[in-house]
Image (cartoon, rainbow, N blue to C red; front, side, top):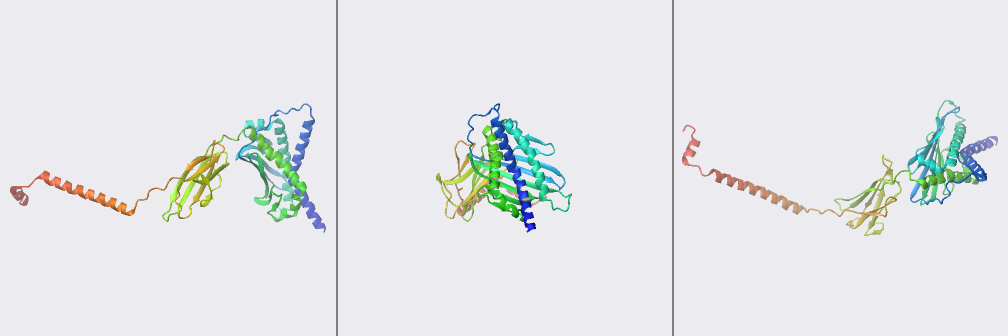
Length: 378
């Protein structure tokens, strides 16, 4: 019985430390917000109505702590918005660095100051959490790593989802998304505090933290400017006709930014399911742009005429339509044979004409010439 209480107390302590990464920082933010509201000298420098964001956007926070039972060697935080790094924190320099100068203007001085304080306190929480999770490790000098990945997504300024995942020494520990607040246990050690994670307290604290540090931070930045200049996709459409009569279309879009894009097939300007479709998924290029490849395999009997690949991207004024090339003309075997026979006849005709011309040029040989040619003694 005592062991059971001890395990419950330990799991509760561990979960409080995990919630501390989110919830306690959020409580601190609420306190700062209240104090600012009570300060008569505080003036909101951005009173104008914020603009509505268009398209799909994603914000990911990466938290990585490495250390032993006795010392935290390194701790880093990286915020990535639309696949471009926005800011970072490193224990070695204890500084929060914003990758673009305008980001500090977008967030405002008060938010920047608070964010720097939060990063320092988050480092403390992770130090406690690391020591707690490896408390039973018999090798005190062995390094361990804990990671937290948290992301949120917007689609036309609508919050469509957020996710949180913990990992320990490179292996998933526990994760969740905000669809139903269901936590999935990846390691047996995480099972004991799953119920606490799914409690109302845990859900509310995580919701507030994601709102403050994921959704709102992303909105502040993107309402000020894009992370990088938008780039329209380069599109290539091709077709492949197999010997057995099968037809496959390919539509490739590359070099575009941001990564939100829509590609679909139309026939005669109409949407529909025309065959078996597949997609590569949106993949990154080396230059921070993106790539997408979709295919359409038509059923037998479809000639593949009047098809188009339609592309929608925020950089395009309207959907761009790229027609699929028509089927190339097929040369019949008898036609090829006839062509080859014609060439042979032309070659033989030219050879015969050359021989006749040569004989006419040399003329008939006389009897004396023949005798000389036949007897070398004359």
